[in-house]
Amino acid sequence: MSLVTRWLKPATTVYAHCDVPCGIYDPHQAELAARTVARMVELIGQLPKENLSEADRHKFVRCVAVKEQHAEIVKHEIQVIWSDYFKPEHLERYPDIHDRTWKILKLAGKNKQNIDAQAAAELEAAVKEFADIFWSTKK
Image 1 (cartoon, rainbow, N blue to C red):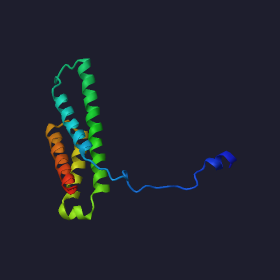
Image 2: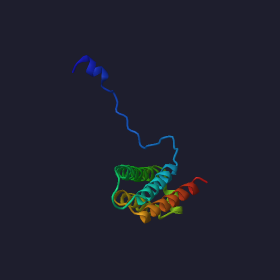
Image 3: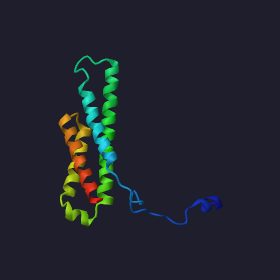
Image 4: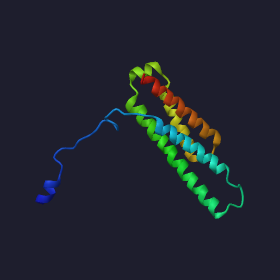
């Protein structure tokens, strides 16, 4: 090992136990992402069903990409709050929080796989309920 390599090698490896050690959590990003999923489904539904123009095809592809990206954002934001924020005392008050979280993650996956206005509305509603629960624990 050269002198430079030894000099650049870290002396200690450090691990963090959470994504946001400052304790700042907010479900707003998940709510906005779920709304974006619903809006993209709505925009896709407004496109002609046949004889798409090149511009319409490009819009379709962009809307699908944005829908899938934002469904993934929902999953990430909900998982972080669920795993890092909720504590046993919250579970006593909301014993179904694990099931609610699981359902949101599954709905987000369904919205990535399909263009379904009902699934998008369900995702939006489920994320809103999750956010309401979150904010009730902050009081």
